Image (cartoon, rainbow, N blue to C red):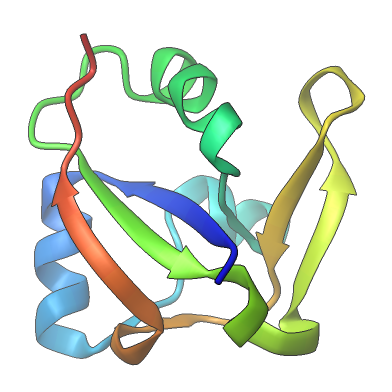
Length: 102
């Protein structure tokens, strides 16, 4: 298993659990893919996009199980980030836990 993490705001996580599908945040929808982070990228993503957010959830996914819809593409500073070109399904989630931004 290759773990990757999607950070979600509490309302996004709540809706995801009810709907069983997450089409993406406003940024994801704008960009045409779901932004995800490798383990060494999560802290930077949290600092940049979730610094003032409460109730952030870290949703762990298995990159190997996402198939061809997952692409590793250059982003911040040229680093390769995982981008998912389909909605997330609840059965993609390996685990979920509150994320401590501190």
